[in-house]
Length: 165
Image 1 (cartoon, one colour):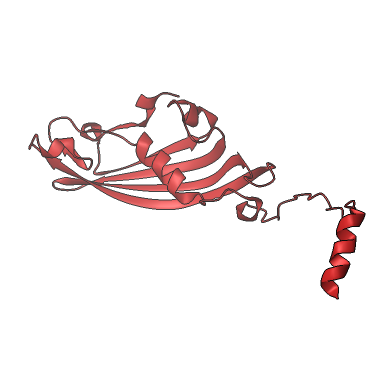
Image 2 (cartoon, rainbow, N blue to C red):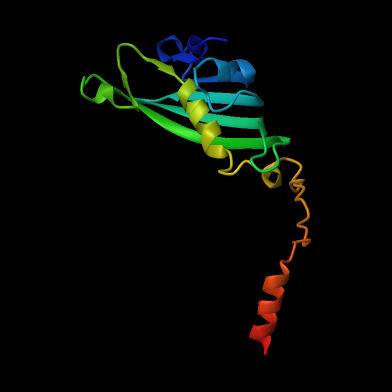
């Protein structure tokens, strides 16, 4: 899998509407360095519709991410299910082409990798804990029992008797 696999060339559209299907897995997260995630299984569908002067891009993601619980470090699966709708505007203005949602009228290629990755990040819960996993289990944290077998210095015990009087 390469970054160019996520390029959509709107010039080559035969119809005004096209649908693309992606399998987002471990190879997806290895494309870019320092990815926050490394493992998952998500099915992505991208529907592009070309209109006069703009292009509508609808994302639909459904699957799960594999990660560790932040509390107990058990492996968990966190569900990802989201929809997103972007509108890309076609322009010839060079200043507007530097902004995110503008494409050149002459060269209409748009890479959707960052949009998919961003949507996955936004759909995940802030805290990755067992309670937010697909099976909604509670964390299995074992706390050691606190022992109250403190050695008592006899001198302090005698002083405490004075306070009670």
